Image 1 (cartoon, helix red, strand yellow):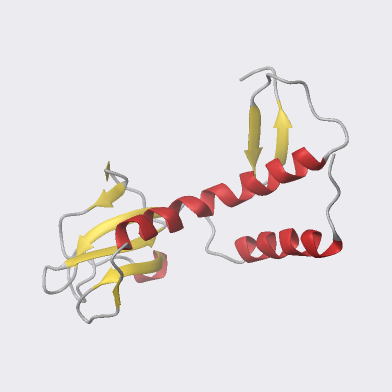
Image 2 (cartoon, helix red, strand yellow):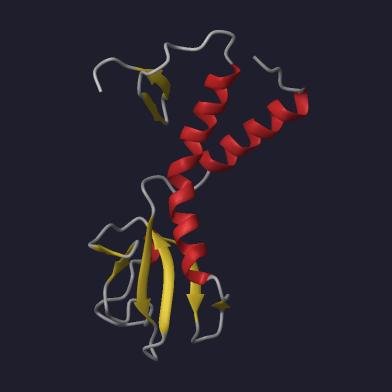
Length: 141
């Protein structure tokens, strides 16, 4: 077992606090168009059919007044919006996927870190179940 320093414990606690303050729920990467039918990508809590990692609506979900406009209160982050030119990074697709996925990964990473720091670990070979309420090994999975 390794021992964390005080600053490392504080860093882990800060990560957990930052995650806890984010929009709750599962996050999804979305691909749509803006008002000028230019690509737009964003992260939202709205699920839908997925193609190549993205919920794709094939409409102008970022266009104000569009019947397909994204629900603004459920948009977590916009990673590509060309009109107005607000977010236009070359890596917008990987950025969108990363932001959406990492939100789900943080609780498990924190739980695995805590598990690895325990003086005695659970039996080897048992699947790990991790979630927002902690980590446990189980025989039933």
